[in-house]
Image (cartoon, rainbow, N blue to C red; front, side):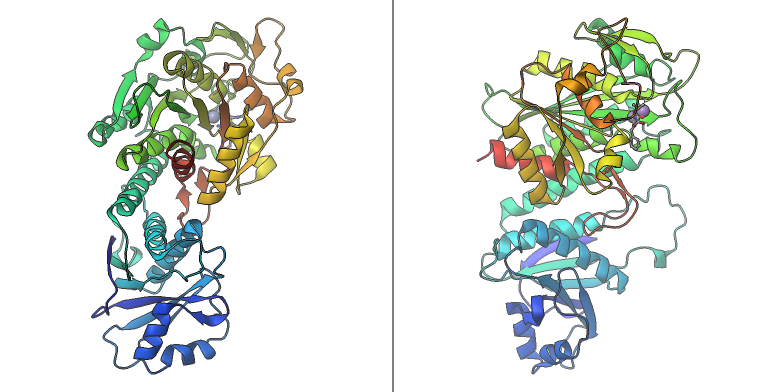
Length: 498
Ligand code: BES
Ligand code: MN
Ligand code: ZN
């Protein structure tokens, strides 16, 4: 699907899309079209039954006589007050789905934001375009004989605006964002026979072309640094573990970077504490935290963000085998703290323990945020509607909550606290990796991570419920969501680039 921007004009074929506000109020573009058609748009709306301009609704009509296009699609924009970037993104995504459902091949959108709306037409058009492209995502690498009619019909979408239009910087932002989210979704969608620690690391190398520094540490490197917790998880796998370090320096070199750390378990069988078979295939996406970190680093480089940022990926495969770690084993982490591994399925926290420690030792970051599909318990608590946010720092928590709201990737703050911490005291080591019961599982896991965080503002996003969607959403076709990329990009823009 090609998406381009242009000044408003009448396309000579295809579908013309115009917006209608709540209660059938015409946008400037819709009014113009109404004038050109002697009031046809108004008459259609008057008899349109259920279509009232509700956000993300649409109706398709055969183009009134005299227009060169074949079809007119009216899309609902809803109310004016909350017509912000996130809303436009969803409208763009829904429009994309509606156009494909109607079989449109080429379409042009006359896009204008109402005067009193929170964002102007340029920003609205950029957000609409981003939403449309995000919804158009497909992972079709492995479909070798798909019928043409099963594929999305839309091949060209032109977003047309009046006056100032969409400037070069806004276009670059859209391109960067879509490239980052697409990269994350591709990684998360890949099966674990294709994407394992080494191949994941290899897929990071081309990011050098985008301007990122990329380093790959192997098991010997990690052993030399004492990363016994991470290495213990990977020791049962035929695939060797990796740690990837991505760096983007877009601000003064002396400025400490913001650090993003991702859980990258390329497949989680549970290890010797083997998971039940049903649904285990889902554990190919247990690397979605690392996937999101790669994606956001790609966005920052793509739009030349004025920030220093590092991304650290802990990449392992958790398998049961003769060399696998056993329940009861004690490992020594890079921090020097010892861990009794009661349950080999609580592996993400072991990987992050060393990745977090390494990040602080090496980069002394201004803030550190980890992303992980860490617990089933967060899904019990929050479902698949928002991710859990655990933070040691209220200001950082508020910045992340605001970015989540602004991008439609919502977070809900969850508790940390000493009572949760006490649950992982061990009889024979400094700590154990599980509490031994399921209560408060997401908070106990977060508290475990906190034992590896020194005095840096830190936040942990438990994205287990958000990495994969079983149904279509406005800007997310079902499958890998890319959750976290838009959110962290926004967080960087609002916190470090103002
Ligand atoms: N990767 C899983 C968490 C998970 C479960 C993510 C379902 C997405 C969907 C994690 O490694 C895990 O197995 N956690 C255990 C922890 C338990 C052993 C304390 C869990 O949540 O059951
Ligand atoms: Mn697990
Ligand atoms: Zn896991």
